[in-house]
Length: 120
Image (cartoon, rainbow, N blue to C red; front, side, top):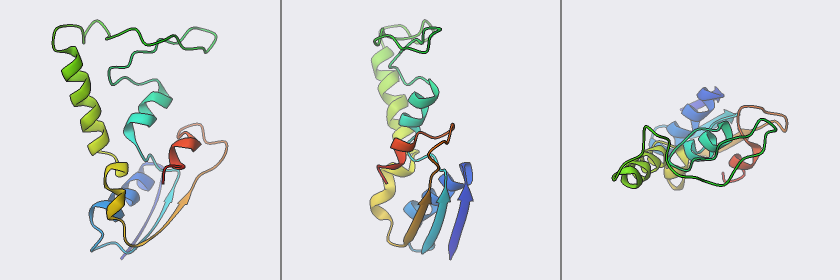
């Protein structure tokens, strides 16, 4: 069985080949998200490493938690969020892929950082 997907469908293609290698033997993933952690950082998301962005596009050094995350358990919550994001990503299961996989990524993709897919 083969699978093709674009964008989120590309992520689903990676997930299918990585999580069900006995079912999916071939896949084409076009502009997929490979790792939710690097994707969130590319989009400015947060997993506990706060990097506020100035109006000129530059980022500051990490400062700590957002106010809604502050507290004695902040580090444990941030680590749990990062672990969940990693385990939910295809990157955590790619060693299981035994079928053929083609990944397509454009140089000018504004949604997925090209460097993130070099990990595949």
